[in-house]
Length: 175
Image (cartoon, rainbow, N blue to C red; front, side):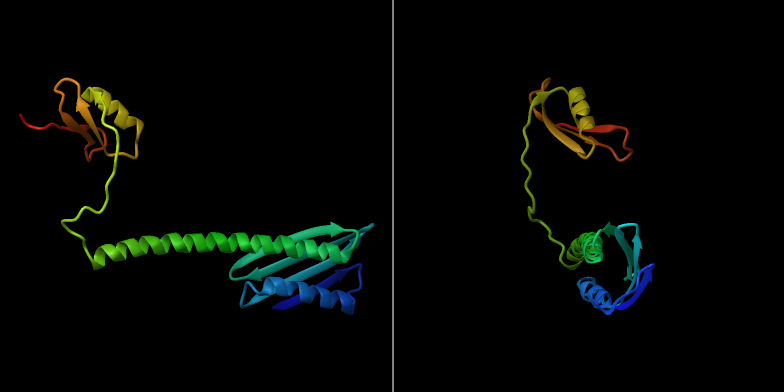
């Protein structure tokens, strides 16, 4: 990791320099190639540590103040580590989701299952009118069909959304 340490109204001692480098090792483990700019300054009775880390196309920043410079540096490192973990978790989740989608597409292309029941869904069938079935289907926009017992005929019917997205189809058994 490339580290640039600057002191404003503060002399950077060898001890502070080593401490910053030691603490930035915690950040370095997350990246192969990273750069850090550390600015340490004193304002009134407060010791302020400001750390910018640039790595993997991302920028991370933490600024804290404390009565002790070492405590301020520790707080910055904790903040940066949290930011990095959060970003990495988001990226990993996105990669995982996209790989699962690719895997599903790949599985469908490699071996197409045919003439087998691969999923079973269970749901309650209630006696209602076809008009009420349309209303129930409209309540659930993610569903494409609804199976129900037609009150008028006493037979199982299916109401389904047509491709135009505005109208519905009714499937009734013959006889």
